[in-house]
Image 1 (cartoon, helix red, strand yellow):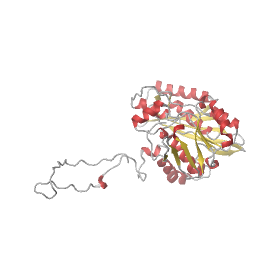
Image 2: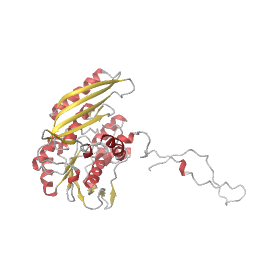
Image 3: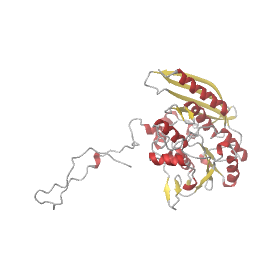
Length: 378
C-alpha cells in the first residue's frame, strides 16, 4: 500500500522528561491498525468498483467467477481478444467491445475512432482480416446533435481506413445524467486465414517477445485532456487499426504463436495473461521497452508505471526464435510497426510470471495489475 489514512488524533507535545516523572506526558498507546483504511480497492468487494473494468486481476475474477459460469461453453473458454469459431467449414474470428472513454475527443482520436480500431484490432490479434462491424450507440438525453454527428463521422472514416464495413447497428437514449454523453458498442467478424493459429497456449521457452512501438501513449494522451495537464510536449493517442501490420507479419510466416494488443492494463496485463495461459515465464529487458520521453515524464509526474498504461495502436508478439529477425524486419517496414523492438523472451523458469531486468542489473517482478491506474480510458 502506498499510503494510509486514519482519523485525526489530538496533537501531543513531547517534553524531555523521564517516564513516570511528575508531570510527564502519558506514552501514547499503540496505533489501532484495524482503524486504518487503504485507498486501493479490495479484491473481495461485494459490489462492482471501477477496478473491475480495468483489464487486470479484478476484471479477470469478475469474468471467471460471474460471467463464465453463467454462460459456459467451450468457445467462451478461449478467453482471447476474439473468439475463433467455425461456421460452414470456415474459420471466423468474432469479437465485441464497449467504449466509455471520457472525454469523447482527445489528441489523436475520439470515441468513434476507438470503437472501430478497438474491435478491428481484437480480430487482427487472431490473424483475421476484419470484414463487418455492428455499431450500437447509447446516447444521453441532452447531448448535442453536432457532437453525435462528429463522432459518427469519425467512426465512419476509421471504418473506411481499416477496410471494414459497418453493416448493422442500434441506437438507444437514456435519461440526462445517466450516460456521460454517449457510449458505443461494436462487434466484428473476420476470416482467419488457413494455417494461422494464434493463441497463448502455443508459446514455448525461447520465443522472442516483440512490441510494435512506443507504449503508454494513448493513456497519457487521454489523461492530459481529462485533467487539463501539460507535459511540455503534446502527446497524441496511438489509436490505429493494426490489420495491415498483422498481415505483413503473417506474410513472413503463419507460424506466429500469439499476438495481443495491450489496451486496458497496458503491456504488463497482456504479458501476464500470456504467461499464465502458456505456463511459461517472461523475461524483459527494461532498457529495451520503448517508452517515449513525453510518456516517461508524464508518468513520473502522475506516479504511474508506463507498463500499465493503455495503448490503442500497438501489439505485442511472441515469435519463434528462427523467424524473429524476419518478422521484426517486416514490422519495421510497415508504418504501424516502424518502432518495433525486441523486449524479451519466453523462458522455462518462473512459469506464469513476468520479470524485467533493470538497467542496474537487478530483477523486478511485473505483476498483473489489480484494478486500473486510469479509468475510462477506452
